Image (cartoon, rainbow, N blue to C red; front, side, top):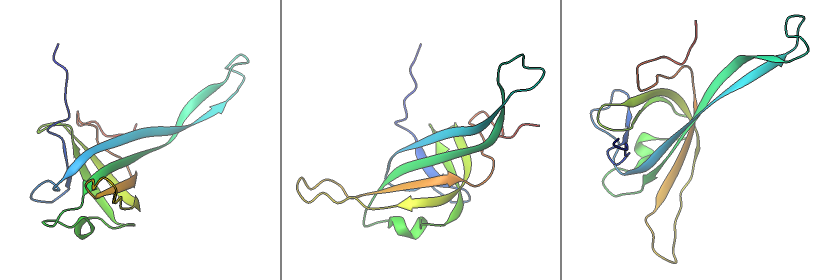
Length: 135
């Protein structure tokens, strides 16, 4: 069985003509805030409902001279990210950029990176096309 690799993954803004340049990798974390309850039908055990759903996305952009990170991403921006696993499978996530920074290593002269974190701003779409809401 072949193992999937993220080597062809990328990040793109919805509506953009091309992927954002120089992304080292991306991560998405899904969570729910389940609400537990006991009732006459749970026989002394707790049951739960899904509660509010949210996801967080993070990625590292490389600071380069061709495309400045801050031209595309700023703290507080609301935008839709397309998070590609490969050329065909992607998450569609409306987000608000919550945190940005910059990492500079003067000792080893590593590449300057801009870590970006975002929180979902509504329902997201899984790579199989399923929306994250339930009916």
